[in-house]
Length: 506
Ligand code: SF4
Image (cartoon, rainbow, N blue to C red):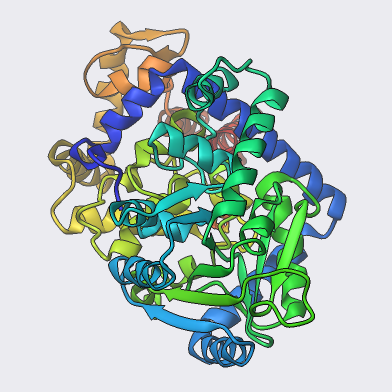
């Protein structure tokens, strides 16, 4: 699942590299902001967005709860349409089925439209090892294929590259210097890929949704390359995760409303193709032979798991990546797996079933919940990240210093006298380092935080100290009725505390 060499490092060291890469940071920030603003505008313009999210969530919950039934219905209908269905338990099995089909067809080249499952199963590597040329035809995928990299975003694979870097890559391929102009660059790729579409023996696609009631599969795209891949070559292979199913075309209406708006802020992508089997005699085009490989590769581990089952609801829109303050700073490669951002931080260990191996990526989150707010099917990723962190500590993989610190904090916070003493000592101790009501000391455990922001200092007088001194004042006045000015001051303290608390939580 990891990129070669990447797992030798930690998330922290990879994030450090990303933070020092100004090009990457600017490119990721620019595009994620554009996508986030687009999604916000599109969902506001649509109206009733929360109701549509809830409808989408209900469709996904229902489908996954009855996945065996709908998968069976899909498979029966697809077979009746003339599609060859294959099941793959593992990534190796999926790649080997695709390779067998290619060998049977004596294929020498495969054109591919965007498919995260094919990344999961390392299909390009497997095909190329067998001497079969695999060509990515999605522009972003083509760019990162030339760069020898993995995608750094589910929807925008080359999000971390700017046009100057892309011009350099494409110039090498063209054998001449291409201007860093998007029209020139796209024009070169279009011409190059047209030849590849015409030559290819096999077209390979992913699958956004598989419709159980008719055995059809649906693709959303903007470049028209998936339509070329699924119509020009004589043989088509589709790789689909086993959870891609939805029951009916009526359900697709809801998903087609949620997916493009959440992914790119579009009402609908430029192309939406529904494919129901290979070419029929009256059809003008389309493949003569069609195969669908239904891939498990760890998905069934999530079925019935109370912590992770909702991951199967994911429609791979990427909105959680665009909303995540951590992803927006470090991009996708820092996560170390095929999937990145909040969904990747949970999906990668869940797909692997090996939480220990990936136990540091759950730390790449501020737990702010922005991923949940952005998710069109309301997957509680922040709860799953907390669960992963808890598992890490319970399994003895926690940071020893942090574990000791939390134990110490629990011992202090559980006893009011110790807590008051600790606050007092803190107030005295911080005097040497507080500037303008904040601590910006770049030393010890505060170094990471204080490199980019100022840590809040303890209030000169804590809530308890203020409350106790007013209480004493009141007792000294020895009135039976509470003095109005003291009462007002006590109420003000409570109000201040409430406002301070809500500001902090925003
Ligand atoms: S978790 Fe939600 S927001 Fe993230 S990719 Fe999946 S569906 Fe989209």
